[in-house]
View 1 (cartoon, rainbow, N blue to C red):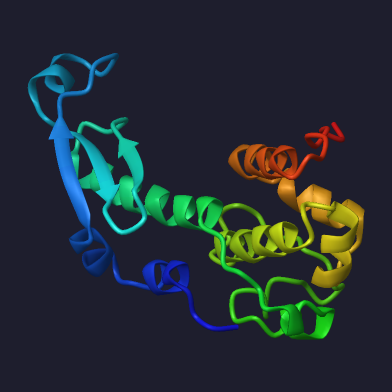
View 2 (cartoon, rainbow, N blue to C red; view 1 turned 180 degrees about the vertical axis):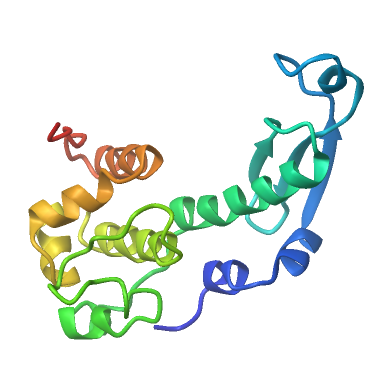
Length: 182
């Protein structure tokens, strides 16, 4: 699969990705003591090329908030931006070789990645690309990804933002939103 802008952006160093952003700092409101209201520690990143905006304001440290915002921006790139998969690559064998999916499945052939695993978010990007290619039919996507429908649903349920985005995509394609198995 040809590298898209998403791949180019997600593989940038933090410094390079930050150079593509407009950075705003501001005073966050809410709990945190007097220091929180006196310093501009909250950070808003606007990724100019993709128009994505993320914020981090939970820490009293601007440096920590900037690092959290960069991590959230990477997650947002995988959640929001789709790569078009060429028709000739819409086979289980071809998808298994995609760089961001190559090591996603365990030795049992299942997607058992936790949200803290560094492979999780790149895998989310590929899963959503495949879902969009098959108009969000989960069983068709599971076949192409080489996993069971139940395993794919479990993977999507790993993170609430992933679950919500999957439901939003399904609605966009005229499908019913996903229902939680729990």
